[in-house]
Image 1 (cartoon, helix red, strand yellow):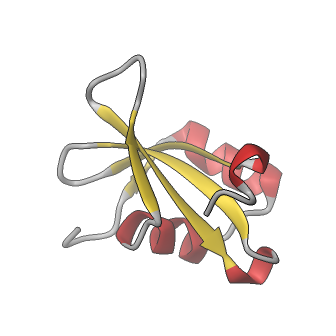
Image 2 (cartoon, rainbow, N blue to C red; image 1 turned 135 degrees about the vertical axis):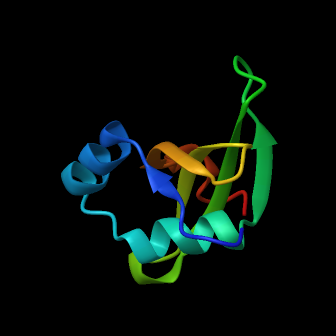
Length: 84
């Protein structure tokens, strides 16, 4: 990723509601522990990574595969906590 990602309004709303910092989101985007294809939309992928500042909880960031990357949404993924 050469430039900063573009955030959809939905993603910005989710970041604010869930108190997630852009630095954490961008770290997961640039250096994910796991990348998964979206099961419904071939244009999207899920990037997952641990966030040290949140006791290594796993952040799932859903982004477009296009360049520049658009951040669609994100959430802390409780199901993945002990899998990474």
